[in-house]
Image 1 (cartoon, helix red, strand yellow):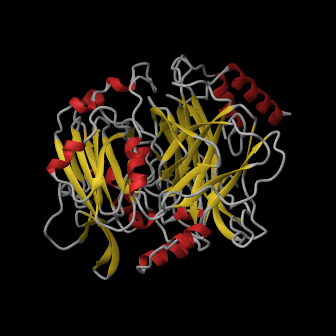
Image 2 (cartoon, helix red, strand yellow):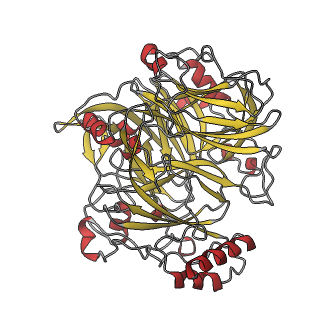
Image 3 (tube, one colour):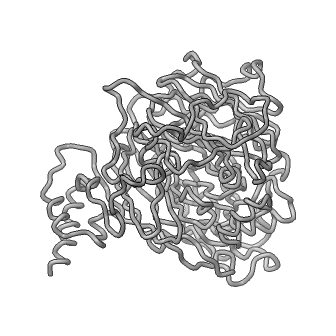
Amino acid sequence: MPCFAKLWGINLSICLLWLLRSCYGEDPYVFYDWRVSYATASPLGTKQQVIAVNGQFPGPTLNVTTNWNVIVNVRNDLDEPLLITWAGVQQRKNSWQDGVSGTNCAIPAGWNWTYDFQVKDQIGSFFYFPSLNFQRAAGGYGGITINNRKIIPIPFGAPDGDITLLISDWYIKSHKELRKDIEEGHDLGAPDGVLFNGFGPFRYDTNLVPENVNFLSVYVDPGKTYRLRVSNVGISTSLNFRIQNHNLILVETEGSYTVQQKYTDLDIHVGQSYSFLVTMDQDATSDYYIVASPRFVNSSSGGKAAGVALLRYSNSQGPVSGPLPDLPNGLDPSYSMNQAKSIRWNLTASAARPNPQGSFRYGQITVTDVYVLVSKPAELIDGKWHATLNGLSYFTPSTPLKLAHLYNVPGVYKLDFPIKPMNRPSRLDTSLINATYRGFVEIILQNSGTTVQTYHLDGYAFFVVGMDYGTWTENSRSIYNKDDAVARCTTQVYPGAWTAIMVSLDNSGIWNLRAENLNSWYLGQEVYINVDNSEKDSSEVPLPDNTIYCGLLSSLQRDQSHRIDFSRMQKLACVSSTTLVALVVSLLCFLF
C-alpha cells in the first residue's frame, strides 16, 4: 500500500525528507510495499498452499492514474526465486522493469527488489503476476487499474462503481506438482474449478459443490450502472463470462476503448482483460448468477468446474436458485471467433491523450517486416519435453539478455530468430528477433495444435487485424481489418487457425513475446524481440541502481538482501494535499 498508509520497515527520517520535498509539478509518485509469501487457503474446499501478497489472495489492486510513477518494493518470502511482471503496462524505454527472465535476474528467496516504472500515456485494465516457475498457478496475481486523467473524458457516462473481477482456472495440485507434470509430458487436463477473486463457486448444485466452499458476492444498487473489469488470470483455460439476465456493454480492453457493443456473454481467454458496463435493471426477486465456465474442454468435466459468484441487489428478496445460464456451444470455436472479430476500436474516443484513438491510421503504414510464427505442441527434444515457435524452444540463459547486451557478454544469445519455420529438427536455442526500431511489423501467429493459445507482447499494444481457420497465406491479407481493429497486448489463436497482428516498434528495449498458456510458456514457447535504438536523444532508461546480478555477471552483485532499496524511491507520492496530511498524521503516530 502507499507509504503514507503503511510505513513498515521505512526509516522515519527518510519519510520526513520526502515530506519536505516539493513536487515541482512533476507526475505523482506512489509507493507500494509488498511481501510475497505462501498462505493457506481452501478455494475449492480443500486446504492448499497459495501465493499471497501482503497476506491477500489475490493480491491488492494496483490503482493508479495515467503518467503516475509507480514504485513497488517486493520482498520475496517464498522458498524459490521470484519475479513480478506487469502484463500490459507499456514501460516506455524501460524493459529493465519488465519482470521476466530475459530482462531481470530473479529476486532470491529472502531478498527484496524495488520496481520503479511509469504508466506513461496509458489507461485501462490489466493485471500483475509472478512470471517464474509456474508460480501463477498458485496465485500471486492482482488487478491493475489505470484511470484517466481528469482532463481526458471517458467515452461513456461515469459509472456508479468500479469492480475488479479476477477469474481463473484452478487446480488442487500445487504449482510445483503441476510443473513437474508438465516436465514429464503430462497434460494439465480440465481444471478442478474456476475461481472468482480467489473464491470458489456458489453452491448452485449440491451434487457438484461441497458445503465448505466460500463464494464471492458482488453487492449493487438497483438502477445503477457499474464498470466491471474482468481478467482471466488463469493458466490454461478459456472462460466464458456472463451474468444471468444482464447485458454486458463492452467498453474497453487492455488499454483501448472499444465501440460499445452489447453481449450476453463473452469468451475471455488466458491473459485477457475486458471492461463492461452493466446496468442493474432487473427486478430484485432474487440474486443473480455471475458465471465463468471453461470453454473447449470435455463438457462433463467442464460443467463441474464452472465458477459461480452472486450478484446481489441491495433490495434483493431472496437467494438465487435453478440452473446456470446456458453456455454457448461448448466445443465449437466458431461462435468464439465471430465474437472476437466483432470487437472494434472506438476511433473517436481519446485514451491517455486528448487526440482520438483513430488518429493513428495504422492501415496506411507500410509494413517493414513480416514474421510467421508457427507454434507446435510439446515434443521431446534431447529427451525432455519442450514447446516451440518456428522449431525453436527458448532456452533461458543464466545471464538475462538485457544485462548481457549492456555488458557485451558474448555467447549468451543470438540475433537470428527465423522469420518463418525452417525445414530442420526442433531444438533449444536463445535466439532473438532482431527488429528495426520504428519499424512497422506484421506478425502471423499460426496454431498447429488442438487447443486455444493466447499470446502476449510486453511493452506494446498491437492491432489484431485478422484471424481465420486454416493456414495463413499472402492472400489472407484480403480479410484484414485496416480501419478499426482493436489495439491490445494479448490475443487468442484458435486451434488449426491463425491470427495476424501489426505493431509499431517505437519502444526501445528487449521485449518478451510469449504464450500466456502457462504450460506452453513454461516449456519454451516464447521469443524476445530486440528493439535497439541508436538515437542518443531517445535512449532507454539507464541501468537501475538496484540491479540484481546473476549468471556470468554474479561477481558484480552487491549485498541487497533483507533491506529496502531507497535509491530508486526518488520522490513522495504527490497526489493531493490530503495525501500530505495523511502522511503527517502517520508520522505523528510514530513519534508519539
